[in-house]
Image (tube, rainbow, N blue to C red; front, side):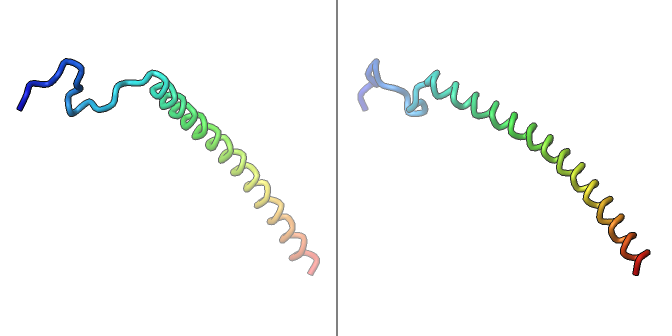
Length: 68
């Protein structure tokens, strides 16, 4: 087998690092972290809305039981 040429890449490094791709990967990770934070906020808002809904339903049932 002939020795590798100077411009050949070793078999385990078929892809050279690409700063543009690396930046996209980092931005994607940051976007995912931000999305999980916003989903936590949404969950808190949903929980508050659920509590309010439950309270209003209980009041409505109480009205109906008293008037029936």
